[in-house]
Structures are given as C-alpha cells and as structure tokens.
Length: 103
Image (tube, rainbow, N blue to C red; front, side):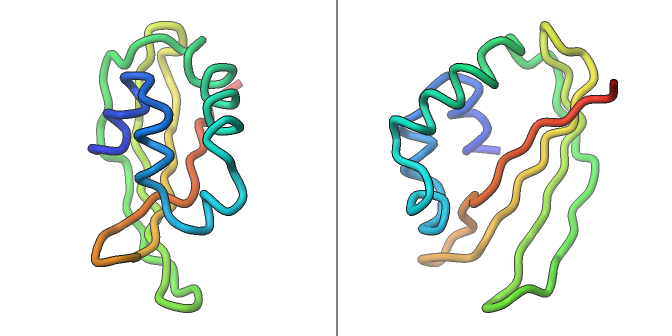
C-alpha cells in the first residue's frame, strides 16, 4: 500500500526506486514516468481501494506474491489493480503493476 500511495500521489521517481531489480532493469525512471502519466493520471484520484485477493505463486527463485485490489478511481469507477511482488533485500518489492477494468 505504501507503493500505491506513491503512485496515487504521482511520485513516479519514488515509486520507481521502490520497485524490484527486474522492474528497474526493464524500465528507466523516464519510461516509468511516461507510462504512468499516460496510463494512471487520466484515471483520476482514488476514491476507494479494497483488498480483493492475495495469491502466492511458486515461481523460481523464491516465488511471487500477486495482490489484487478493487479500486474506484474518479474517472474509472470499477477497476482491478494487480501488483506482482518479489522478496528482495529483506522487503517485498513491486515488479509488476497492471490496471484492468470491465468492458
């Protein structure tokens, strides 16, 4: 949730620094900023966010955690945010972030 708070506030560099190594190796801070400005900003502010599911995925080397939230944004009332996390440097780090909504 701390990472999502950074994203919600538009603190792109801060949220990028808090991601896992694999995320940062595939995305520069500039690319993350551009993608976030294009994809996240138009959704507007978060009106509500509730836990939807949490799944442990047995993937090498140490597994992944998939956390889903049902989120209502000002400009998109029904969305699902999915975070993929890995354990790195004694903490869970985001390595994937997807926002989906029903058609």
